Length: 441
Image (cartoon, rainbow, N blue to C red; front, side, top):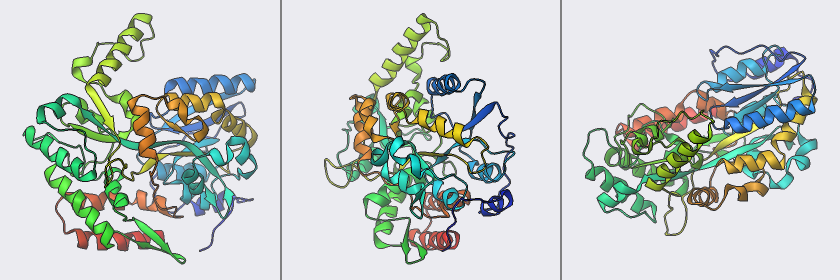
C-alpha cells in the first residue's frame, strides 16, 4: 500500500488525498489572518477554564496575535476536516482530531512532521497507542491530546432497591443490568443505557472476549467480526440489547447521561469526565452554570456533591474478578495542518498544550492527559481510580489508513443497530466484515 508523506504537497494534491469518502462538508471559516491563529477543538470535552488558559498564555507570549478557538461538533467532523485541511483558505492552524480518525489524515499528508519535538512534548511518556495512531512510516504527525477510557456510572438508590451489588465480572454485570430493568418495568427504563448504534461501548465485550474489529494480514485488512471469539461476544451484546436496555435502537452513544439524569437508566458507560454532566433533579439548586458569584459557586459545589453522593462509578469488570474489561480508549490527538500558514506559532501553542500546567489542568478536569507523567493529577477519588483501572487495558480501533472512512460510512453503527434489532449475528457480521474490507482496502 502506497503511503504518502507531507513534504511539499500542493493544495490540489492534498485535496485529492483527503477525498477519502463522499463528503458534503459543513461550512468552514476562512483561514487565519496574519494577526490570529485558529485552534479547532471538538465538542465540550475541553472545559472553558482550559480554553481561557490557552488564549491568555499564547497571547501573552505573542504580542499582537489573537488565539481564536473554534468548537466543532463531533458529528460530521470527518467531511469538515476533509474540506478544511485541504485548503490554505480554510484550514485551522492546530486541530483536535479523534484518535480513531487520526491514521487516515496522517497517511493522507494532512499534518506536519512533529518528530523533532517528540522528546520536548513528552517522548515515551506520551500515550503510546495514540502516538501509534498519529505515526506513519515511522514519522510522527499527530500527538495525544487526552484519553478517556470508559467506566460505568450507576444510581446507588436503584441498586439498593433492586438488591444489586456492584458487579465483579462481566457476567455479573449482565445479571445486574437485567435485574435492574426487571425491578423498574417502566416502558422507557433501562437497566443499562445501551442505544442500538453504540458500538463504542459494545466493542468492550468484543475486545474482552478476544475478538477484533479487523486485523491486518499482509497488505490487506480483514474483517474479524465473524471470528468465533467475536461471535461469542456479539451474542452477549445482543442479549443485553434484548433484556437489559430499552434505549432507542436508532440512537448512538451521544450524551448517555441525559437518560440517567431523567431517571430512565440505572447505569450508563462513558469516560469519567461525564461526572460533570450528571445533574439529578433532586440535586438541582437552580443556579446557572456560568454564574461566577461566590454564592452561586458555593451552591454549584453543593449541587455537584449531591450528584456524586447519589452516584457510584466502577470500571466495567472483565471475565475474572478483579480484572477490568478491555474497553475502547476514547480521546483525541492534536496536530498542525500542513496547510497552516502559521507553523511556528502553532508549534508554540502545542508547547503550551504539553506544558506541565496545562497537562495538570487536563487531569484535574477528569481527562487522562496526553503525557502520562501527569496522570496522577487525576486525584484519588473513585472517579480517578475508575479511570485509571479502565485505562489499564483500554484499546483503540485498528490503526488503519482508511479507518476514518469506516466511521464516515457508519458501518459499525449500522451493524450494531442490526444486532440490537435481533438480526442473525453471523449473517450481519459477515456483511459487516465485507464492508470493512471493502472500505479499509
